[in-house]
Amino acid sequence: MAEILYVEDNVDDADIFSRLIRKLDRPVTYTILNSGSEAVEYLSGQGRYLNQVNPLPKLMLLDLNLVGMSGFDVLEWVRSTDRTRWLSIVAFSTSDNPTDIRKAYEAGTNAYIVKPGTYQATGTLLQRLCHFWLDDNLRSDSHDYITRPAAG
Image (tube, rainbow, N blue to C red; front, side):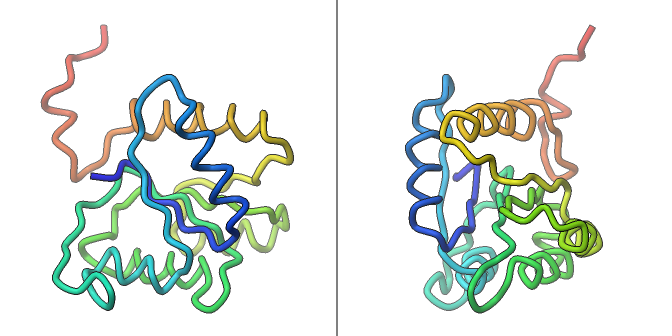
């Protein structure tokens, strides 16, 4: 199971993500898809993923400025589909436009992060994202809350 599903149409950003995620101090499995329509096909088991019901990732990083089906469209589809409704989604965008941020939250993103401008800052951010979303965050469709020891 991929812990992170990254939807990104910029080849350079996808490459940087791959290099940085492999440098983390914990193993992280991931899948990178390069369009919004491919993300919907992947999550629904349709199109090129016909009859492949892929387990849901713990986190989807979603670029909003995708060609064709936008990240906003993907958000709306995910939140309107029973299987994916509660998927943790972080909008991962170059835009810091307040209108885009508000629109992303209205469409159902769990968090909005502006992509850092440097390789090192992106690495630090990915480490923090993985720590919270993969290690600390509990999903309602997860059994982690049953198997994890109580804090104390």
